[in-house]
Every structure is written in structure tokens, then in C-alpha cells.
Image (cartoon, rainbow, N blue to C red; front, side):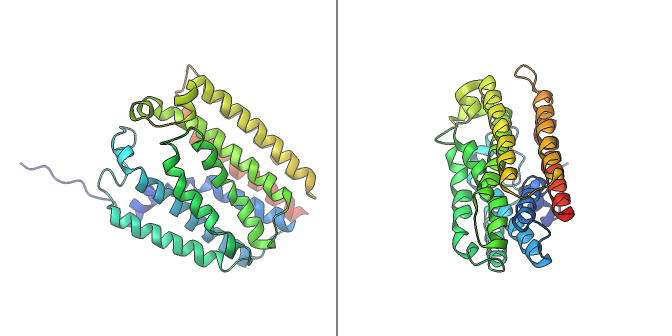
Length: 291
């Protein structure tokens, strides 16, 4: 009796899994933080709509490009071999077309926003394209990923005001180091496979304890930059409560894992980072509305 081929999920569901659509919660709240802080109040519905669509397009493009470039690497890693491209759930052509559609959504959205964004859009796209290749050459790939994600609040700020004050860069730096910090942890999932494949990460270069040390430093700097940004802005007590919440949650995140016990690494990476970004956005938005 011949084996029955597994039933594939509907195509939209496969694309949603390809780009980990649920992890948009990491980046989108910080774009909203940038938007609300930029105006010191509530942005227009028009701006919020197009910022949201630009973020969805940009993040979908970034994730799909990453999956395309890394398809061969993913196929050789037991943890990632079941992803959509190596497992045959999506073809290369389908993902290329998805990338093109995501880029179109991003560009259409950008053109509804402030004029300066019409000139700056190639910067994040170049970052998306280069990022997957960096792990082949340098452990600094984590910082590049952080810098690309740190563009979320910066992009939202310029999309509304057409200006980039230093406070926007401080906020972007905080997000960049927050993302890089948890990506140092994320590298621990694949440390042995990465070494076998000759790939670079902070874990393969400095070991498990080195990854922990870099993550701690990055997250201390995250809180410091949130403080710096707040000092330059007209913010209220809710903003500072948000910064305090981020600090407490980061401490808790680091308490979940130890160099000799990585059993709760999934909770530290996936659950806690979603909580941190949403919690900070709620405090900032409430502060801006209370104004």
C-alpha cells in the first residue's frame, strides 16, 4: 500500500509560517512607539495605516529573503529542515513572487508617507538583502540584524515628521541593541550545527558564556538608550514606567536561562520578547494620549 502524501496547509497559511507572521509583534509595536513619540500625541489614522502596511511589507520581504538565501543551510539543519522551502511546501518561484509582492506593498506604503521616506527606502531593503550572507563571514551579523530592526521606530518617525532628530536615533539604537541581545541568545539553538557548517555567530566565536555576556551588555545599553531618548523628549510618568517595565522584563528574561541550563530558551526568546515590545508600546501610547 502506497503512503499517502501529507495534506499541505492552504497557501496563505504557508506564507504566514514562512515569514513567522506572529513575530511581527516584535517590531510593529516599536514602529508605533516611534510614531507616537514623533508627534507627542496620537498620529493620524492615515499615517498609522500606511506605517503598519509598510512594516508588514518590509518585514515579510526581509523574512522571505532570509529563507530564500538560507534554504540550503536550513536543509542541513535538523531544527530548520522542516521549513517551507527545504521541505518543499513552497517553491523557490513562489517565494520569489512573494518577495516581489512584499516589496510592492512596502513601496506603495512608503509613497503615502513623508517625502524623505521616498529617498530612504533603499537603506532597509539593502539591509534585508545583505543580512543572510553575513553569518557566512562574521559573528557581527547579530548587530546588523539589530540595526535593521532598529530602523522600525526611526522609519516611523521620519514617515510622519520628515525629520530625524537625535532622539529618534537613540530610540532606534535601543531597539537595535534589544534585538541584537536576544539574537545572541537565539544563536545558541544552532551552535553545534553552525560550527559544523562553518557559520559565524557570537556563540560559535565566544561560546555559550560569551553569548550570555554580549546579551547582558546589549540589554543594559537598551535600557540606557531608552532613558537617553526620554530625557530628550517631553514625556510623562507612563513613559518612565514603560522603561522600568522593560528593565524588569529583561532581567526576568535573563533569569530564565543560564549557560548550563538552556531548557527555557524558547520562553526567553519568543514569549518574553513579545511581552517586552507590547508592554513598552502600551505605556508609551498611553503616555502620549494622556499627553
